[in-house]
Amino acid sequence: MERGISFEIPNKYGSLLGEILMPFETAKFIWRTGGEESYLLKGDELGELLFKDEINWLEGRHFKKLIEENNYYLIFTDLKAYPKNKQLDNIKTYEDYLKSECQLVLLIVDSAYVTIYCKDNESLKRLYENAKNKGFDHLQYITDKNDSRANLTVW
Image (cartoon, helix red, strand yellow):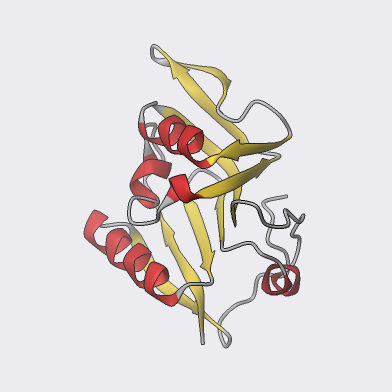
């Protein structure tokens, strides 16, 4: 069974979250951010944090605007998407994720290594095709057999 995808993105600034999540309907969800180290750009330098609080809930339209209309530099990113008006749980493991209302987990480590878990198979296929079309490196499906991740967090 396909759980998600993993790939590498260029270690550079831009609107990479917007590019990665392009085929996913980000505005339809509530987004949990937590413990990231990612920065908005101010000129050619790092500015304030992209996600201001250690743990934050962002409404989907605001989240979409933030990731698509800004340039930023991602170092560590931990994002989780929940349907609106559903239970917003704190997920730490794959088992927590399966039991929760969370529909998508996106983790970025060391500015380049991306892992996405997605419960909807059609959305997962679109995310895979998007990553392939963008030319992201080392793209592969995460399956029951090759998933070695113990926690669904970046820390």
